[in-house]
Image (cartoon, rainbow, N blue to C red; front, side, top):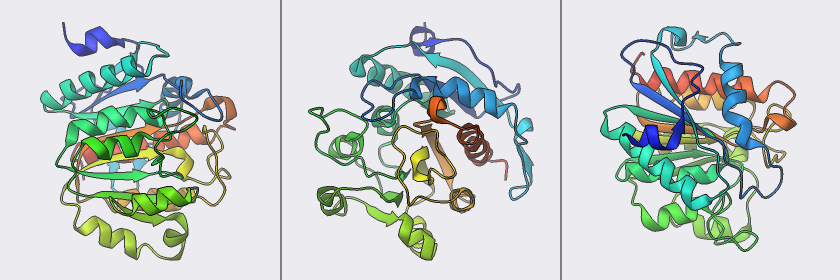
Amino acid sequence: MSYSDLFLSTSPLITISGEEKVQMFGVPFDSTSSYRVGSRDGPNAFRQAYWNIEIYDQILKVNAENVPVKDLGNMNLTVDSNYMLNAVAKVTGEIKQGGKVPAIIGGEHLLTLSSAAQFEGSSLLVFDAHLDYRDELYGLRISHGTFLRRLLEKVKFKKVVHAGSHAISEMEIRDGRKNMDIISSFDINQSFDNYRMALKDMGDDIYVSIDLDVVDPAYAPGVGNPEPGGLTTMQILNLLYLLKDKKLVGFDIVELDPYFDTGITAPLAAKLFSILTIMASGKR
């Protein structure tokens, strides 16, 4: 029995047949969410949107409908953080060992603590409104608001770049700068130059994590912790396109909350997924 058989319920909806490079799974977990719960239903909302948007990419000149993807289904529902983290680690590691690229749909950002940890030695690129670098949040040391501090305490990456932040504490910015390059949404709004420079010395192997709240709630209201001052839709798309010459070893898209969506956040998640899938498959 594989870890996929053990931890995932097979309800795949977006499998595209062929010799796939990307294997995806959903993580319906939001037990440490500190504001708006509901991202546990993000994976299925994402799938519904994926089949209802056009995914021919005019920039990459690739039709994502022709890029094979295997959908392994959703992780078994749980409210236990330890169970979730163990399951994500085991399934992500198994996908990696099989020579595939894991693509994970959340669910809250805590899941990245386990998925990204499987890629020690690669670089980590995080898009997020928040640094998630607190030592604890509401008494929890393991939560969606602390995952990045816990991750960097135990895993050594080649380089860590955090892009799009616009809602951080004074302590986080002070401590975070010691361990990562921080490029705020305000920096990005002025110029992409710092972001381009940061990418140059990340190497080719990059794990990408996108918290959808990096996008301004005017463009993406369906998230757990919306914060004004975020990126526009076109900015986040263009930031991803700058990765086209990199090798994506894995990626996740998290914090999609369909209960606060107006019908635009899930399609954005689907579009981001299609871009990352094309790149991860080498179809460019």
